[in-house]
Image 1: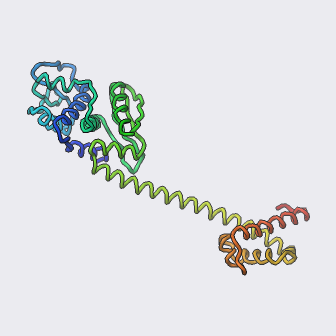
Image 2 (image 1 turned 180 degrees about the vertical axis):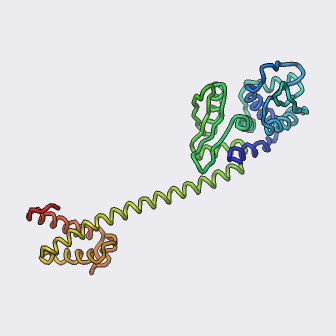
Image 3 (image 1 turned 120 degrees about the vertical axis):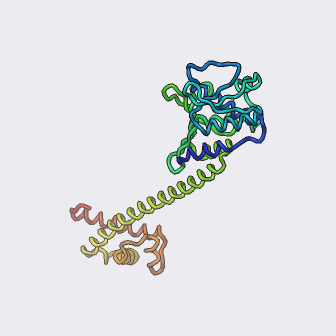
Amino acid sequence: MSFAGEVRKELSQCMGKASHCAVAELRAIYEGCKKNVPAAVSANDEFIFIFSESLTIRTKCITLAKKAFRQNASEKNVNGANCVQIPYEKQIADALENREEYKKQCCKKAYLRGWFLIAGTVSDPEGQYDLEIVFTEKEKAENIAVLLKEYDIDPGISRRKDNYVLYIKEGQKVVDFLGLVGAHASLMKFENARIVKEVRGRINRRVNCETANINKTVSASAKQIKDIEYLKEEQILKTLPEGLQKIAEVRLENPDVSLAELGEMLDPPVGKSGVNHRLRKLCEIAARKREEGGKKC
């Protein structure tokens, strides 16, 4: 099962504590399923229909209807389309068609949970962070975006063919959303994967940095050794100050060590900057002597 499937499965079993939360979640599912209504089906005064080919959604609707309205909803196939039918009552119809914003925090979260169940998806946390909810109406996507901003989640909205996609692409905000809608087990799995991914990334960056530093050190060492050998062959090295002769000798004997390690090998020890200064001085002398001798560095 995909990670998105695991999240939906967990949310299908998550239920708000109060009946008004069940109303809010059922309203979101009802709004999201309107696009599924077959053309041959017309409204009637007997039942309210919620069409969905998802058994998970239909089962959740039956549970929500029982808790929200104390109605025994049932599954039915109408003109070849699967749906849940709820015995019609004006109170129920008004609640599901209500356009007012919810005031209670628990209802807002239940409403978001319903929308994710019917139209949401989230990518595997080991890949790119991406949570989406698809809407057929731009206004509805914008309303949900405003609601999420109350929880410091600022989603984007993009047009995709005839739909509007609300998306969250920041790892921490995906975690925040999962916590809001009650997917706590999925949240922990996402967080664990995210931590492993970020630690692995830091390790890779550190290794790459250290590799680059090693390559830089090796390259610099090769240049230093070449210059020192030139000074030695031209009988110039023995004419230089003792400090330069010592560092030249230590570098020739230890081509792979760092500047700090070279400094510790001297007697008395010399700091990294002092070692760097002496080696740079040797390279400058070698360059000048080559130039004087008509040779290229």
